[in-house]
Image (cartoon, rainbow, N blue to C red):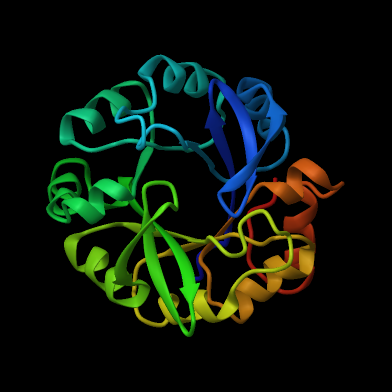
Length: 253
């Protein structure tokens, strides 16, 4: 069976509002996160991802009441991330109606957390987010909201998180984040060719052709984007229609 390629808009939360970044800095206010959800409810979105970008460095999780508020409005599967460090954190967020959880820094610091979480909640519900940055000729994994080089090579870490039981990888290029100049196809292709779990490609979408290229050349199973939907006339629906015309299998209502 050929699986449909998913479009997953990502929403960054900072100080209670939705923002958009460039290379994990230069944050720009894009308004109410609840209004953002309501708009995406009408735009033929497959899934929605919310990440509290201050949570890790402030040593907290995304507040449960915020997750409940989002979930009450959200009409598609909801992924939540930001500051998740323990199984207890995960239980609270799943109880607040998150469908999937995304972990990043905590997984780097305690890889066994992936294994525990997959066993308790199921691999399909656990996503490991990998923030990648190219240094000379090699891509490395960065933690703490893109601030700390872990010295882990992206390919090695991707293989490890699959081995530990992660259900998906959310692969974000720090170099391309918010730049709207296309995906890092080389990075994405290296990861998709080395793991068997789905890879969500993020960082760089600026035009419909970028979505086609990251699937056909990069092998992405899903695509996360934000700037293109906030700052251009393109919508998830129009992008999916373009992809379908190029022969890519997507869900269209």
